[in-house]
Image (cartoon, rainbow, N blue to C red; front, top):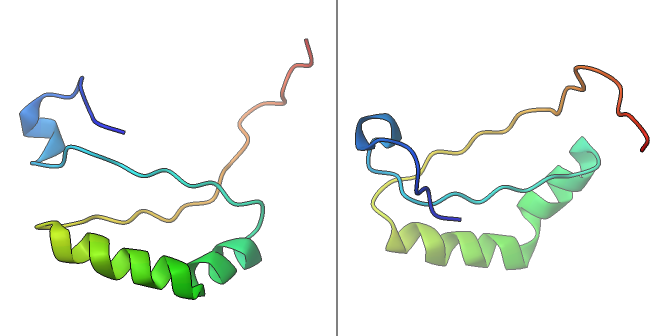
Length: 67
């Protein structure tokens, strides 16, 4: 989605982000090596000036509350 809230100084020219969540590291590895993803990444990266990629694990801080 498009960043509509951050001040320009903080976003450093970046205006959009993709957020993906995987159930396991193995799912991420399979996705990252999939031919369709590699083809899409090649097209996307040829159309943008710069990109930043963050890979980080989800850490549960406190238990989820069942409502």
